Length: 366
Image 1 (spheres, rainbow, N blue to C red):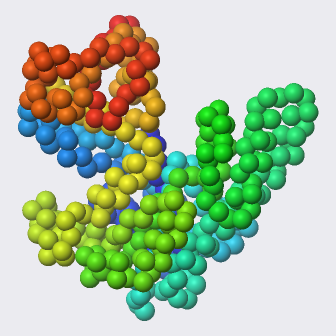
Image 2 (cartoon, rainbow, N blue to C red):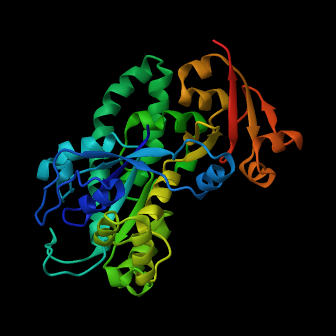
Image 3 (cartoon, helix red, strand yellow):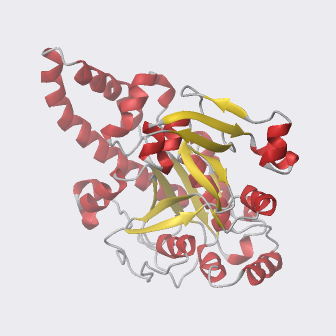
C-alpha cells in the first residue's frame, strides 16, 4: 500500500491534521517540539461520490472505499540533515513514504510557539527543502564512490544510477523542484529505489484559522505560499487542522451544518485526501456485486492482470480476461445487465491498461 507522509516544522499542526485525517486521535498533539517521535500510521478512506451512485444501483450488502496510508512524521528542524533534533531518524521515516504532504503554518497565534520565533511560510518551506536537499547530497556523495567502481567494471545498473544522479544533482544542489521529465522511462522506473527525498511528489497543506477558510486568498501567508507552489509546479490545499479535528468528532449531518456555517462546501480533509491520492499517482477501479461495491486503488499505467492481482495474487496468476464497463456507461445504463445488452461491456486481455472508473469483473483460472 502506498504511503503519504505528513511533514513540516514542529507546531505547525501536523499531528492535529493527522488525527482529523484518520479520525483516530492516535497522535499526541501538544504545544512543544518533538511531541511526535515515532511516526504514527493511519489508514485513510478516499471520499468518492461514484461509490454512492453504484450503491444505489446495485444495493450491495456493504460499500468499501479505496484506502491508502498516511504517516505522521515528527517535525523537522534546521540542521536535521546533520542529526539535529533527531534529524537522522526523521529523515529515514520520510524515505519510507511515496509522497509528501508538507504542512505549512499560515496563521498568527501568540499562544502557539514557532520553532523559529515568528510566522514566515516561505522561510519554513525553504528550511524543509534545504534539509531534504542536504540529506540527498550526502547520500549521493557516499553512493557515487561505490557506483563509479562498479561502472568501471561494466555494471549497467551502476551506469544508470550515475546518470540519474548527474541529471538531478543540479536541481538538488540549488534546492529546486526536480524536473523528472529529463529522465528516461527506464530511469524513472528505478528512481523510487534510490530513495532520494527531494524528488518525492509533494503538496503543501496551508494551515489557516477557522475564519479564513471561506476566503483564504485574503491571507497574505497563503498568497505567498501559492505563488511559491506555482513556481515549483506543486499543488496547495488550504485547510484548518483544528476545525477538521472538531469536524471529525461530528456525525454527517452535524458536519454538513458546521461547514455551511463556515461558508465552506466541502471538508478540507476530503480535499486533502483526494489531492494526496492524486499525488501518489493513484486511480480507482470498481467491483460491483450483491455482496459489496468496492473501490480499488491502483497505480496509473497498471494492466488488467496487475490490477487483478491487487484483489488476490491468484487473480493475476490465472488471469484470462477482464469484463469491463466504463463508470459513465454503467450509471447511464442503470445496471450491469442493461450495459451488457447495450454492448457496453468489453472483454479486455492482458495488455489492457486499466482506466480510472472502470467497473470490472476478472475472469481467472488457477
